Image 1 (tube, rainbow, N blue to C red):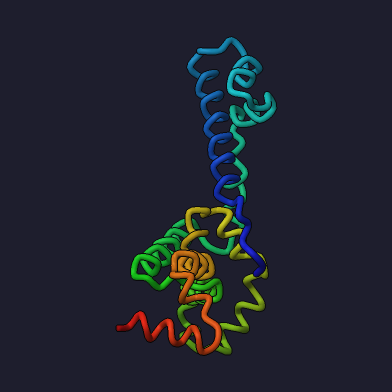
Image 2: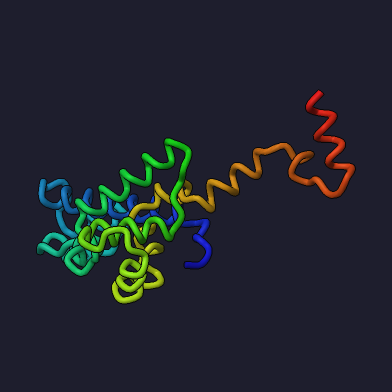
Length: 177
């Protein structure tokens, strides 16, 4: 998959704030608080054309393409709950586990046969699927195994993690006394 983008949470927050501003501008126009669409757009710092399209019934980008996604919103919520639960138990999943869970959710008839799962993964789930999934659910980024392992390593005792050779072994033995 590649390295997870460190700014993902910040970008998601900015998108949520922008979406909230667009909705507020639309609500302001509909409730008559602004004399025009342009004034509402300026007040909330969003584009006039975006507010106008939304008032005419256009959907936000995330909702407009739901029908093109592999999982339905309910299926995605179940995967999110599964990831959160695993992380709470101290077993954060790897990206490969998430892909396998998606395959089993969509096609339980495949069972746990690795060959069938691998064939389906190659055919259906693209290289960047999990990255896009995390774009839709940025709260999961710190819960994946690679990030969890990195946090655990940073919090560990540097004297134990930087052991090299017999001197480190003696240090461990001394600590045990």
